[in-house]
Each structure stands twice: as C-alpha cells, then as structure tokens.
Image 1 (cartoon, rainbow, N blue to C red):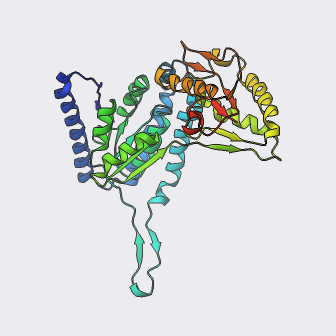
Image 2 (cartoon, rainbow, N blue to C red):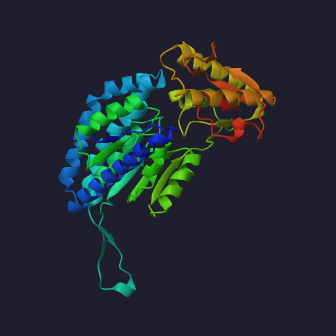
Image 3 (cartoon, rainbow, N blue to C red):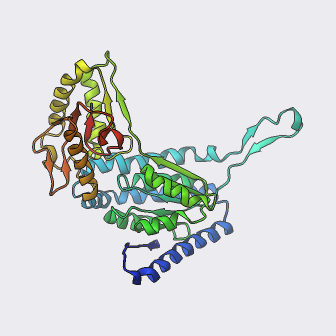
Amino acid sequence: MTAVQSTQTSDPTQKTKENDERLDLNQLFTAQQQAYTSEPYPELTQRLALLKQLKHQLLAYKKPLCQALHQDYGNRSQYDTLLSDILPCVQNINYTIKHLKRWLKPSKRHAGLLLMPAKLQVHYQPLGVVGIIVPWNFPVMLSIGPLIAAIAAGNRAMLKLSEFTPQTNQVLRELLAKVFTPDYVAVVEGEADIAQAFSQLPFHHLLFTGSTAVGHHVMHAAADNLTPVTLELGGKSPVVIAPDVPLELAVERLIFGKCLNAGQICVAPDYVLLPEEKIEEFISLFKQKYRTLYPHGITGQDFASIINQRQFDRLYHLLQDAEAQGARIHPCHEPAIDFEGRRLAPHLITNVSDQMAVMEQEIFGPLLPL
C-alpha cells in the first residue's frame, strides 16, 4: 500500500518537499486511472473476492484497530470502536455481497410512445477513480464504508486519512495492503496542504465527511474539474420530546446518542426541545441514568477522551461562553473535567439563548443544551 505523508510547516525550504508530495499524489492518481482504463469492468467474481478478503482482514485486525484508536484518542473504549467502527463495516460487506449480483443486473425502463418499438435498459458502469476524504471521529467506518461501495461498483479508490489518527492510519494502511495493490486502493496522509491537493485531483467522484467549513473548501477545489462531490456534513441535530413521551425512555436514548464516543458524532443529539415544566425532571433522570451506565464517569475506560487539545479547548470555550451569558451548567458527574486527559463529562445547559456560541455552532461533544 502506497502512502503519501505531509507535515505542514512555514519553513520555505519545505516547498520542494511539498511539490514532491503533490507529484506523488498525481502519480498515484495516474497509476489508478491507467489501471482502470486497462480494466474498466471488473467481473462480479473479482469484486466479491475483494470484498470477502477485506472482511477477513477487517476481522483479523479488529484488536489492533481498537488499540490504535485508543492511542489516538488517549482513551477510547474498545466497545465504542467495535460497535461504531468495525461491526457496521462487516455488516455492510455482508449486505453488499448478498445483493451485489442483483444490483449489477441491467434495469429495464419504459421506452415511451416516441421511442417505440425501442427497448430501454440501464447498465450500471464503474465511474473510475474515486476519492474518499476521511474524518477523525470514525476513521474505520468512514473509510472502509465508502470503500466497500466503491469496490462493489467496480471503481479504484484513493483514501485521504485524517492527520489526527496516525496510529489508526498505520493499521488501516497495513490492513488494506493485504487486500489491494496501490493501483487499486491507495492511502494518503497529510495535513491541510495535502488535503487541498487531494481535493484538486480530477477524480470521477469525491466523497467528503467532515465540517461544513471544510466542506466549502473541498467543493471549491473540486469545482475546477467539475468533479461530482458527495458531502456528509455536520449540523445541529435537535431532539424534540413531546409532552406524552415517557421521559425515562427518552433520557436513556439520549444518553446513548450523546455519550457514544463522547458525543463526537455528526448525528449526535445537539440540543433538546422539551416542555419547560419537565426540565428539572429531565436533569434529575439524566444524571441518574448516566451514573448507572457510566459508574466511574470520565475516570473510567468506557467514556472516550476528546480527540485533541484543539477540540477540547473549543468545547471548554463553549461552556465558558454560555455561563458568561447567563446559562446554568449542570455537570452529570464529578469530576466533571479532566484537563490533562482531555475528558469532559456530559454537561446539561439550561437558560440558553440563541446568541450563545453553544447554540450557534455544532457542538460535537458531550454538552447538551435544553
């Protein structure tokens, strides 16, 4: 498996190195494009064989992947990784293998009066070389998941992995090298300069998962090549609790969604809308259920750390900003914050206003405004 790596620097002597790295990217893309051109329609048997090998290696590497993600985060439960990163990929492969033969069959279409007596069919063809930009929060599922679809559809793929998960990247690179040659699947690592160069390659399709701000840059970079882009971006996922909903059930579901990976999930509950007269009961139930599910709080091994200092500082600033503007902060466990370990217990926030940063930005962490 070929890997391109980069470290950003302001040192002007690095310009030659950066140019070389961009050249490596172009060479990888050219190699994949040539390989695709020479074999544009991989047989069904070949695609199924690759998917089965990928599944085998994924299961063989599940322990190293859990260990690597734990190292990258500082603390991440193996159960979080198995549940949210590895098992969904295995399920995805099983489902794809089961249905791929039917998916590849030509699909009949009605010709219409003007085209009679013609017969119309849609034949599903590979696109070519697909680019996949992977975020740090679920680096296995959000790299292997799109890769499964790309391989099943007969494409080649280049993966740009996050610079914030270097240990996981190393394991993924080793895993993928046991299944694919570099002209079939290539791994790229690097910071913003490499990500920008990656987005500018003339892919036949580009997939990006990450923040809206970065998504703007990715789409802009891809526009020069008219590259079709699929963006999976973040947002402010609200939870609405109606008056007739059993509050205990709602709280249990919210804790799962907000505490998995310490809330570092693009579809995690961002804030809660509920009847005002139920807020105090909600807070009491949330604290009680959290302490039952996470008896050791942030000192235990089950609650993940925040991925890096930048993200931790951002979340801490959201708390400080809300409190400074009159919000009430309700930590769900003591200790509530571990600065050294970058751990943050769930904090419920009441008396919030739309002007607070916590209500303007995607939270992406264990803070929950009510």
